[in-house]
Image 1 (cartoon, rainbow, N blue to C red):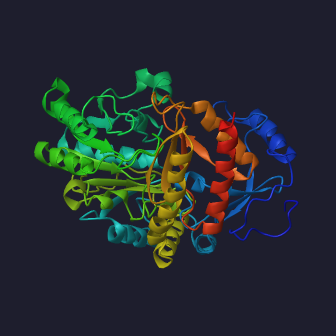
Image 2 (image 1 turned 90 degrees about the vertical axis):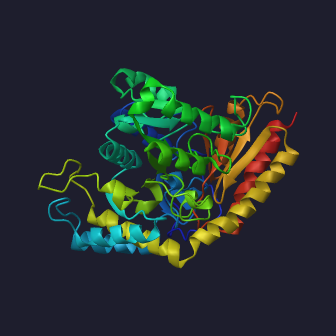
Image 3 (image 1 turned 180 degrees about the vertical axis):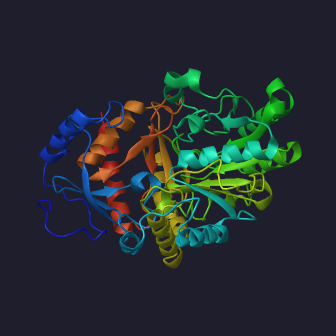
Length: 458
């Protein structure tokens, strides 16, 4: 146990008993540097802390410091870290059956999870392929699209993040992710501009401009005849919490219907209640052909899925005993148990509705920052997924990346876990557990605002 006796209850406020990072975290950083490849974990004098326990929205590090998590563990912990129902389900499943024979002799619990996904998914989405990460599920979706259409080309979008394994990386926008591996990446991905209202550079209306660009790629380029899928995030997460204008998803739906392309929504970041609906696409009432989910699905365990319509999923050939897409841990029973428990917790505690309600409270506080601080260029988001874009000045809208970095570090020293997103890492991203209390949220925002005001004072 750490120097703080007792387990976290989940509704604590920050309590710091050492400098941050403390001596135990710094020692762990030195040990990790000796055994983990470079480029994975940033290790410096001021970063990172090492977690040893978490509950609800509270995290305890190796030095006994308690933090409030405004990241939700990368939006994973929808029903809170170490949710008791999820923990109990995992413990019971580990004792009974930790592993089965995936695509040969599956676990019974996989059937129950796939049935639950079919109930929750919008529209006619009810046939699934399970995977272990969002990137794997994206790649399963792209495989499905090429089987369905016979066309391997894909339209993706600027600012997109779909994962870093090779198939997903090919559809991810960031040049710093792509360039080291450029020669090995699939070249059939074409990028259209995402309709980012605050940073649109195409002139005219972002919505019309983006849809026209997609239409041109599909209809008027030599590669258009080879495009079988349009892959898009209904709200960009790592791209900077970018919410497209109303009508964007519907416009893509109409284009794909007319031109015979498969429409894929990547809701790994936004799925399972974060935006105040089970899925972000439901805000616009648009159903894709394929829905990619992950992060919150597993309740803290690695699990993802692509869920499709029967018509599209029929493109996969019948099984002859040798699956052409599978893995050793396909439908892992422990991950399935965690997912079922997590989905039950979200549903029974009305966390989807709570995300919408608490998201409005969060947004009111953040909107006040726009009025009070010139460095806050824009606040945007839906539900408990909100972003604060920091700029050098509102006229130029030049990204204030250094300010964002200082605030992330200052928040850490005040016991608040916060991250920045976007191509310039200048967007403070808020994706707390959906169970965060109003007291915790208000405290965290007050601490961050204090540091924002201090950073901007002459």
